[in-house]
Length: 368
Image (cartoon, rainbow, N blue to C red; front, side, top):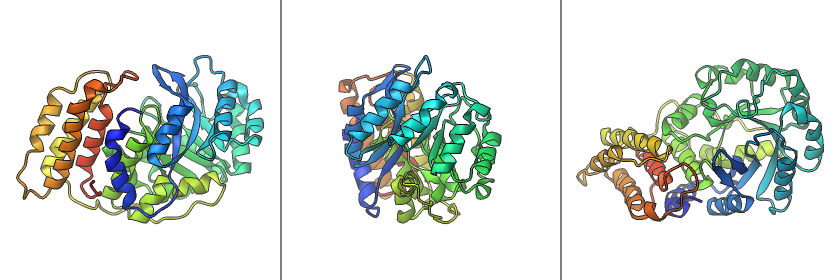
């Protein structure tokens, strides 16, 4: 999908530097919603490129009827030869279908508090949390930028049902500033990395113990190759060791999906692994400005030009190798973006610019 084939060397180099272990993307969708689409076949191709498995659930349905899409995800998982596990997307009016899907092989639950207009304190959801507690299941909760604070309900849910594993998606954007101080009180609270700015990923890794962080792409809004590369590089830059990075990319999530106790992988790191030089800051911030425009279908324009100028440094600059790698990604963008298909509102080639922004902000991580 997108420009995965061009980003691939940066992902492969990261994987080569890590211990061998499972890679599991805990947040992928299939379906058609908001001009963004993904088929099961596209998801499987994307996972093959990442040499990964995934948890999958439906995209938003306008009429909030998830019975057929949930059944389709479960069927896809059964036919995937172990590459996919289904999560059941639940709304209160369809709670009665949950246990049948779990008995049929689904591995957990997805709650989307904004698209499906859910309140975690809704008493109709109590049976959902209860069965997740009884079966030691993950419950993935949308916690994206449009969501008001859910931390009070999240903490209450974790405390009332200690054997469920509650995963806040999108780096818990709405609540990380408070929740990171409460993590030690709720050992069943986790966070996924499905967001596109390295600042949010780095904040998560600097504030939350690595055993609580699970890699995620949010396909089709990103892809496993692009998002897991970003997650791994930010984990490395934040100060995690290779074993901890490997756990974030799938080791811990695999244990959770299998119903095992999660591992304690130690505290959040005290400091980043390498200083970020001034030109790297210039490049990363300008590329993020360009990327924001590209996600609205616009051209990157001046911020991309500024970033390219900042990559032009003498060979003895301490960050010359990183800037050269960034420039290679920007050259790939210039060479290919006009020929890449437009799949949605994002401007083609956005993922090359996204990868370049991440590489610039993560000089400690290995380069191809």
